[in-house]
Length: 68
Image 1 (cartoon, rainbow, N blue to C red):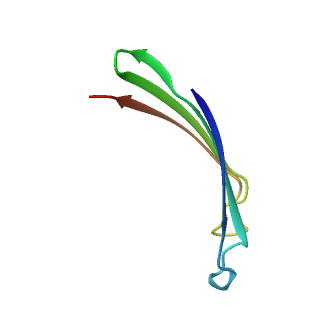
Image 2: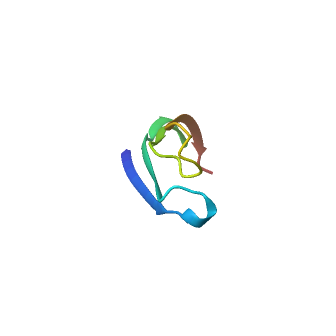
Protein backbone atom coordinates (compact mmCIF):
# COMPACT_ATOMS: atom_id res chain seq x y z
CA UNK A 1 0.00 0.00 0.00
CA UNK A 2 1.47 3.36 -1.05
CA UNK A 3 0.41 6.62 0.62
CA UNK A 4 1.43 10.25 0.06
CA UNK A 5 0.53 13.27 2.15
CA UNK A 6 1.01 16.99 2.58
CA UNK A 7 0.96 18.99 5.81
CA UNK A 8 0.93 22.79 6.05
CA UNK A 9 1.32 24.80 9.24
CA UNK A 10 1.14 28.53 9.83
CA UNK A 11 3.75 29.84 12.25
CA UNK A 12 4.05 32.83 14.57
CA UNK A 13 6.31 35.43 12.92
CA UNK A 14 6.49 37.35 16.22
CA UNK A 15 8.65 34.52 17.57
CA UNK A 16 11.06 34.75 14.61
CA UNK A 17 9.67 31.87 12.55
CA UNK A 18 8.74 31.84 8.87
CA UNK A 19 5.12 32.45 7.88
CA UNK A 20 4.50 28.76 7.22
CA UNK A 21 6.07 25.35 6.81
CA UNK A 22 5.20 22.59 4.35
CA UNK A 23 5.96 18.89 4.81
CA UNK A 24 5.63 16.30 2.03
CA UNK A 25 5.77 12.58 2.83
CA UNK A 26 5.36 9.32 0.97
CA UNK A 27 5.63 5.75 2.16
CA UNK A 28 5.10 2.21 0.99
CA UNK A 29 4.19 -0.59 3.36
CA UNK A 30 5.38 -3.98 2.12
CA UNK A 31 4.57 -7.39 3.51
CA UNK A 32 7.68 -9.43 4.34
CA UNK A 33 6.39 -12.64 5.91
CA UNK A 34 3.62 -13.54 8.35
CA UNK A 35 2.80 -10.47 10.44
CA UNK A 36 5.97 -8.51 9.58
CA UNK A 37 5.91 -5.40 7.39
CA UNK A 38 8.61 -2.96 6.25
CA UNK A 39 7.77 0.69 5.66
CA UNK A 40 10.28 2.94 3.90
CA UNK A 41 9.32 6.62 4.19
CA UNK A 42 10.63 9.71 2.39
CA UNK A 43 9.86 13.10 3.98
CA UNK A 44 10.78 16.46 2.45
CA UNK A 45 10.46 19.92 4.05
CA UNK A 46 11.14 22.55 1.37
CA UNK A 47 10.89 25.49 3.80
CA UNK A 48 11.86 24.59 7.39
CA UNK A 49 9.88 26.88 9.67
CA UNK A 50 12.41 27.69 12.37
CA UNK A 51 14.54 30.05 10.28
CA UNK A 52 14.86 31.37 6.73
CA UNK A 53 18.56 30.47 6.88
CA UNK A 54 17.80 26.73 7.03
CA UNK A 55 18.07 24.78 3.78
CA UNK A 56 15.36 22.34 2.65
CA UNK A 57 15.51 19.03 4.52
CA UNK A 58 14.93 15.46 3.34
CA UNK A 59 14.76 12.38 5.54
CA UNK A 60 14.59 8.73 4.53
CA UNK A 61 13.56 6.27 7.23
CA UNK A 62 12.73 2.57 7.46
CA UNK A 63 10.18 1.23 9.92
CA UNK A 64 9.31 -2.33 10.86
CA UNK A 65 5.80 -3.29 12.01
CA UNK A 66 5.19 -6.60 13.75
CA UNK A 67 1.56 -7.43 14.44
CA UNK A 68 0.83 -9.56 17.50
